[in-house]
Image 1 (cartoon, helix red, strand yellow):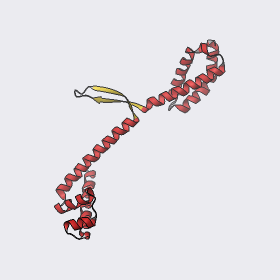
Image 2: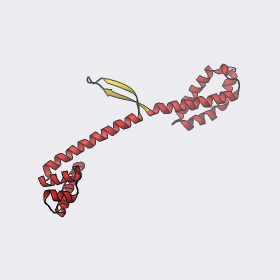
Image 3: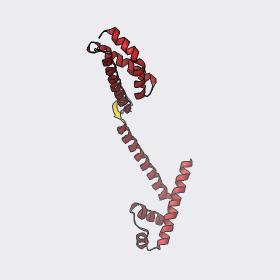
Image 4: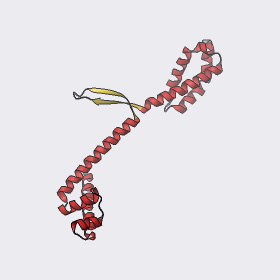
Length: 179
């Protein structure tokens, strides 16, 4: 196909191609860039294309593939970490699943830290009896009846001690978060 025919076909169908690219890409600039890249790729294969229909089909296929490639690249992030000497080291190809795992690990670590703070507060603020009851109830998952039997208390007294201990923990946490 001659360069003139290819250029005229591309100019004639440019709006259609641009609308197609805009439908796949997040911004108009991305769509324009993809369209230009597609034209460059097609220009390199101009001798293989024989008609305007082939130019159109090849352009649409090229744009679709480029849109998929760009979407995949957006799903991958470059993560910069620092080594022991505080030099930046780029780790390429951290995808969103890895980032989510990392965020989940950070959330777990944050939860562990909060648990340590609550446990330290419990050691300071709760009576030894409340600590034992909370430990049996929350950590060992014993029933109120079992705890009452073990500590030779009435079940209602166990429930009251659990309630008071939980209230102390809530009040502490509320006060801590207001700071």
